[in-house]
Image (tube, rainbow, N blue to C red; front, side, top):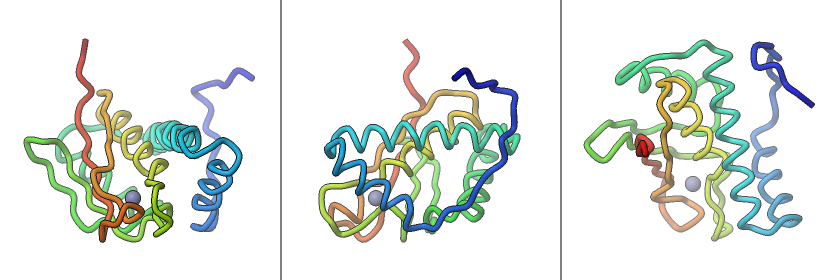
Length: 151
Ligand SMILES: [Zn+2]
């Protein structure tokens, strides 16, 4: 099916448990590695579409302001710190919907969502890595976003 990029499709609301259930089901069917890649890609595209549909565009502090606003509206997690330093944009989140104490999983949808959202807002491709995760024993999830190197 060919999708028209200019068509607005609205949104729908799911219970927070849905993203964790999707993560568990994908891991059971595809295996953990494929499930994590799928969730990252799904998150990235969702972040991109969210910024586009909301008409969010900006640079620097505007990106951080939009990011804060989106977190409040989306309910994916509770942001406790967003700082921009020489290593990139560091985002600390608590109570992410994906994280659990299961062990080897991470917040891949959230990681993708952040990368896609910031890439779309700034119109510059960005990477997002999850440096610490509740699922790996940390007390919060920490993401670092950096500009993708241009080749
Ligand atoms: Zn996490």
